[in-house]
Length: 275
Ligand SMILES: [Zn+2]
Ligand SMILES: [Zn+2]
Image (cartoon, rainbow, N blue to C red; front, side):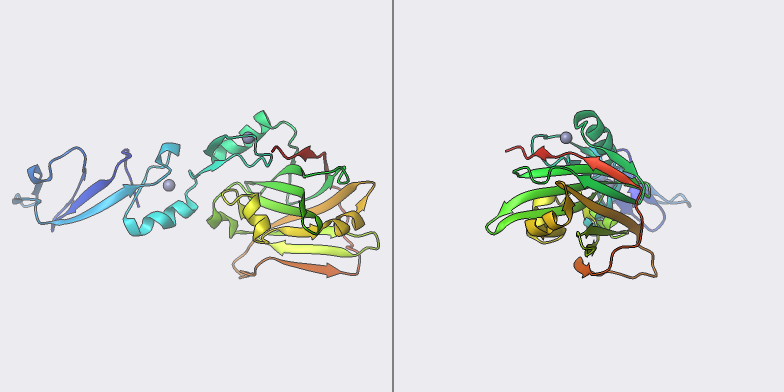
């Protein structure tokens, strides 16, 4: 990967002695002369030519130039990749770079509470209010930001809830993290979902439709709630090489109560989906 200050494809002419880099837009190729260290010279016609393309996110500040076979791989993990506002009500059309998402949420969506740390308990209030509804919390850990969205919507067979952890980052960056989401029923039963976060690029609808987030029906939500408040424990961990866990998402239930104590509680009130 090379970096140059142009937002256009770039051609490198490769000869036996030196590399000559020129912008394809600015020069007539056949006017270029390659001069060797010994003073010999030749025109560059007929020499090997390599084309570098700018990253799709050039306008966001990325200055990488890539050969065609590297381009999509780079863009999967490019930190300049733009994204849409992750606020779930559908009323905001903002788009920008990853770095701008959190300032945007604080500025334009002031009801979003945030929490610093790997584990928190979200208390979603008023889950009995007719929906669709959502609750949003920003969780900051490992130098990254995660948007947690609890949602309530309706299916043919009744209420369905989802809890989704979205990384403000690329799909490639998601592979470094692992999430555990947990509900506790009145008798101490635990409902646990394990899986990776989703990239902010992938959106809520596809996560729900593809069963790639914690989904549970209204009866479980009400069984695990108290006075209309549902508590969800969110734990985000970083994958280590040794884990090697490329396992997919799964839900487990446990009969025994979770012995851990939680003093990290963020209470968030509901909002209605904009439609
Ligand atoms: Zn890039
Ligand atoms: Zn927004």
